[in-house]
Length: 396
Image (tube, rainbow, N blue to C red):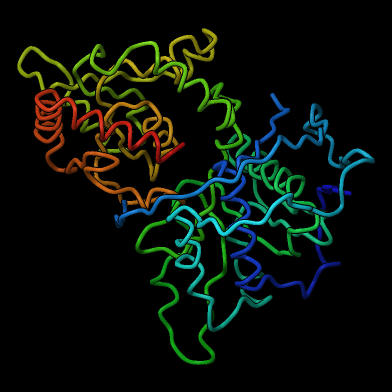
C-alpha cells in the first residue's frame, strides 16, 4: 500500500539516513521513469554548463501500467492506493541496455558524500535550507513541510515521487530526502571548504538546478508533472502536443528568424535581449515577445500555448532568475535552439553538445551572435535542420 501523510514531526523515523548508494538508485529510477527511457508513462490526475559527447541509448518497451490514484482532492492529507495495488515490481524481461549519457551526472552530483557518507546531522542541518522533507519507509511516503513553496511546486514534486512508488512497487529503498523548490542554488561550496575529521559535511539537498559554485543535487523540476497555474501539461502530454504542433509548419516554411517569448523582468540578460528585437534602426533577425501571464490567465491562455510556438526556424533559450523550465519545450520544437550561454544546468542539460544539439550564443554579444547564427543557418539549411532535429531527439 502507498500512503502519504502530511505530518508535522518525523521523530518516528529518527536515525533513518540515506546512503549515497540508495540515493543513486533513487535518482536513477526517477530519471528512467520520467524521460520514458523505459517507456513507462507518467500519469496525471490533477487540475551548459560543461558539454560532452553523448552515446546512443537503448529503450525497453513495456505495456502501459495503470494503477489509478484518485487525487481530485489535493487538500486531502491522507490518500490510499486501491486494494489491488501490487507490492512488488516484477519486470517482464532483463536487459543489458545502457543508460542515456546524462545518467552519469548522478554520480557527479553525489561524489561530495562518497567517502564521508550522509549523516543524520547533515540532514538536520539542511532543514533551514529546504521547503520540505520526504521520508520513504516500506513503500510509504511521509512529508514534513517547513516553509511554503511558490505556487504548487512542492505538491507537483511530491506527486511525481508518488508516481515513482506506484511504478516501481517494492523497489524504492527507504530514504530521507530534503527538497528546495526555489530558483536560486542553495548549498554553496564556499561554505564547506573546511578539511579534517571535524569539518561539517554539506547537507544533501535536492533542487531543480545546479551550478559550479553549488552542491545542490539536481532533480527534475516540478513542470515535468505539470504547471497547472500557467496551463502547462505534464511532460509526456506536453511533448505529444508539441510534436503535433511542429508538424503544422515544415521547417523550410517557418519564419526565418529567431523567436523568443517569455517574461523579461526576471533577469537582466532577458532585458538585454529586448535590445535585439526588430526596430527602426536594426534588424538582428530576432523576434521577441513579452509574455504577460496575468493577461493570459484572464484570456484562457490562448496566446501562450507552447504547441503553437513552433513557427520559427530558430528559438532562443535564455535563463531567467537561474535556469529556465522552458529549455525542454524549446528543444522539442525541431527549430534550431540558439542557447545564450547559461550559468546553471538542470539534470539533462550537461550532456548537450554545442553545434550538435544547439547553437551557442555569447551573453555579452547576443544581438551580433544571434544574427550570425540565423544568417548562417538560412545559408546552410540542411545543416541547420540537422541541429534542430538532434536537439528534439535528445529531449524526447
